Image (cartoon, rainbow, N blue to C red; front, side, top):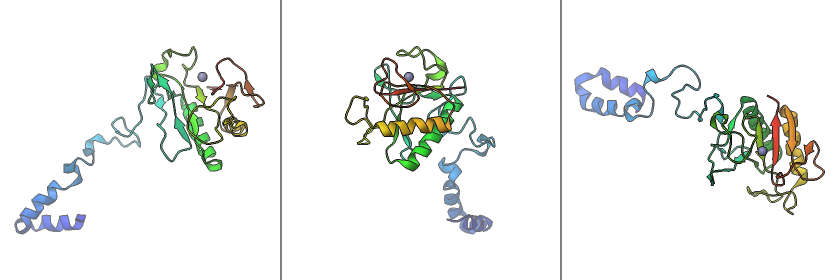
Length: 206
Ligand SMILES: [Zn+2]
């Protein structure tokens, strides 16, 4: 039914009263498709927007959880279970960096980059790190030659040093990178640090 049908039927009162009753029930508002008009507050992303990602007490958003057509996927566990974004609250500078780098990466490579721990909601101390409290630190997996979205350490034959170098270069081009911790040899701008064989820890300046 088109809106003009509706107006026509409505304006014809009694004759089409039965059809009018059906038409009213079928309006999107009645079907619950749209929120009541009063729920809109004019902004692109109001507090009532059901599609808005979770926001923490610092007003940091959770990283969108791997839209399929994006250049990244998410990984990570918290308290022995998949973290499902609970460990991915990002400072606005970090959010911008990840989304921008993912977009640039997608333009040059079919593989997606693996994004892990950032910070917990409210910046509380994580169980497994002394860091990762500001939303300005992120763990990222090195690239795999086979493109599988799984862990890889620099000692593994699947480790792609060239791809990993390129990814770190993108971060340095599009974000204020302060420090990158990673043990893989011959990767520019990285510093060796225990426990960083299967991910690089990237810290941005706030
Ligand atoms: Zn880290």
